[in-house]
Figure 1 (tube, rainbow, N blue to C red):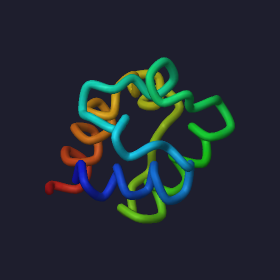
Figure 2 (figure 1 turned 180 degrees about the vertical axis):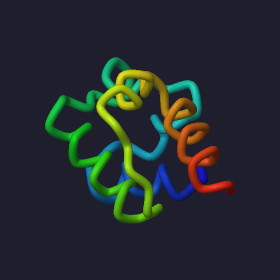
Figure 3 (figure 1 turned 45 degrees about the vertical axis):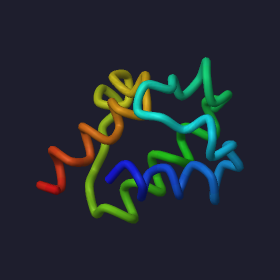
Length: 76
């Protein structure tokens, strides 16, 4: 799951691959703004066939938070 999310961050949002770790903060460390976060959410919903609520998005501080969430939702 981490590698898939990392690929999306690098390919779709032009994040430096060396910066993407499970503990990296989406906004602080990776420089993702609110529009890019919305794009990431849509990409994740399409790629993993999940629905991510606005409340759930608030818990997405680090890459690891997103990985854990997607793993739980998809059972992978």
